[in-house]
Length: 243
Image 1 (cartoon, rainbow, N blue to C red):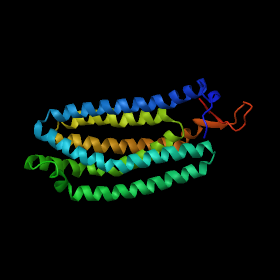
Image 2: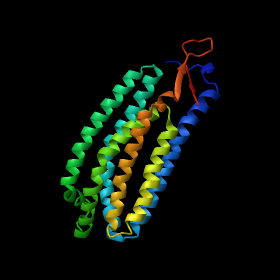
Image 3: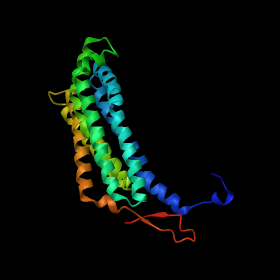
Image 4: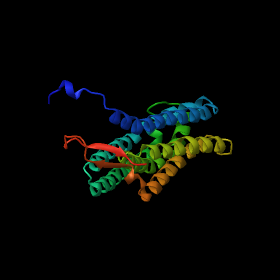
């Protein structure tokens, strides 16, 4: 591999393409962070024990979500590569195996977390009330691991095809709007803090359903098409968006 001076040139088309794909993904991360701030604000209103339980159980969540995040990134990358090679059949195969693998791993994680939730919380605290609250949290939120993992695989496929806008809209709707509104409403019912935990699980199910619905429309397949470069060098392909 050699670096030549003529290779270092400004490519407006590539910069425009990167911004068009990357900006919605950045917006998505901002939205998810805002949603987490809103959720934390609601949790904080229930006092220090609930906050401590939320923090301890949230660390278990972070570990449990890692396979889903990893498979989502992998599916996104491989889908993009196969779209570039016009191998659409292999993209479907990647999605299928991604769903099988991440779903299977998530089932195991769900079972382990659900039945050992008390012991897992005891890693972070010895306070009996925090352990009780954290255990209740994991009994509810661990049920979201499977839909959350499958949602990441489907959105990874959609994002890998270049449709980052719709993936962002789905995520913001499920994890900001639905989760925040539901948490605010249910937390003011007899469910109290359990209403917040339920909103987390429900938002994951909503996110998966939205991803499945949009995936089945097939519209994501037409967001990027590949065409041969019109430049003199036929080996240099260019990506163009269709509206």
